[in-house]
Image (cartoon, rainbow, N blue to C red; front, side):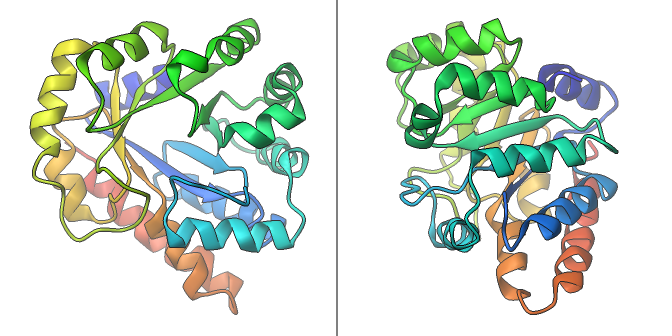
Amino acid sequence: MKILNKIKSDNESGKVSFISYVTAGDPDIKTTLDIMKSLVNNGTDIIELGIPFSDPISDGPTIQKASERSLKKNINISKALNIVKEFRKEFSTPIIIFGYYNPFLRYGINNLMRDIKNVDANGILVVDLPPEESHQIQKSVNKHSLELVYLVAPTSTDYRIQTISNLSNSFIYLVSVTGVTGTRSKIDKNLIPFIKKLKKITKKPICVGFGISSTKHVNELKKKVNGIVIGSAIVKIIEKNLNDKREITKKISNFCRKISKACRI
């Protein structure tokens, strides 16, 4: 199922889409696959699978550490895509490949889109890709019938938002704060007014992430957006339970069930 279609289906069924992030290979390949299965079995609607990178400039300490753990296991794009291939033997849940431009460029943009399509992933998000430099990737994404997710920040101008909306063939990923990923105790007071502004400029679905980590946050936002993205809160569970991998999947399952229940509108 296409990412956009899944979001539409979720919204029509009376819920906001729950999008979960996990870093490929953290803490190892088998556990990543187990985590992805537990995410889906406990309410996740869409998965972002992160490609580890040595300089993840938009990620806070939690996901930075996850990348470091993964890189120490020699995880690369090919190994990450193979996780998707294994996952697809059981699940059709939409998957977004999440990462940074440098490793994607080194792999080869056309090769990457071809291989993403071959393992039946659905889209890609390039964190540090400005829309002004997106032509090559957008062309290749379109060629392979994939979706390219763009980021919009609270500092984005009306012109930039309109540019992104015109380019996008997927949802708009709204960064909830000016800063890096990581759990936060409160929703930024400027976020709700910015969502209202964003809706006036674009008709594309809006999913909000960065700092969303609790049912309280979900309850504050679920009637205002089309999807909720949670990453660091999930990765933090992995970090705290590295010595007991069964506990990782158990605690992630419990967390996701609560979030998924809160996503009902």
